[in-house]
Image (cartoon, rainbow, N blue to C red; front, side, top):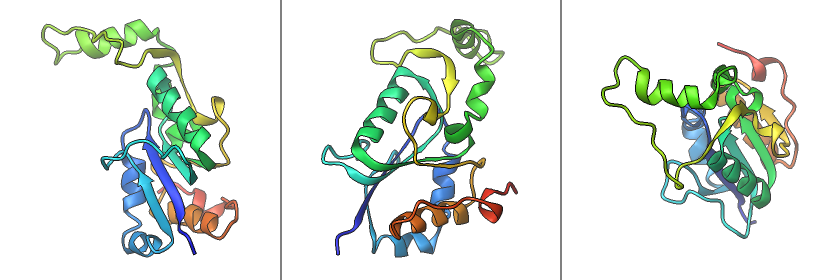
Length: 180
């Protein structure tokens, strides 16, 4: 039996959701009997393979052009897309900047903060252009499963992956949607 191919990526995020994924602990090792992890932001392989994967997992909101490209690429290359965490599912913390002008946000972050000396806003075609507002993933690409939480528990993430491995879209309620 072939393994389920799984790819992950993070967008505008703190990395807490990927840490929660790793907190599955020894269950992660058992999952490797059934899952081939093709790409992840914490390995050298950053993009899902062109031939596609079964499950794509995204964490974080979409706040710039590069993040949108990454979300679209994941959507195109996966059969089932899972948005994990409040930022991905609900726009969470990144939405705090939505009431500010993007240029003012950049100015504050790179020039006027108290810890900045001789700051300069980085400008390059290689950098993603900041959108006027941050957005949850489902606002821009189709998502089959949204798992909120900041971060969601390792048990909740494991439940989602285990259900998908059984060919079911997970039912998320009760203990899987609690905040500790």
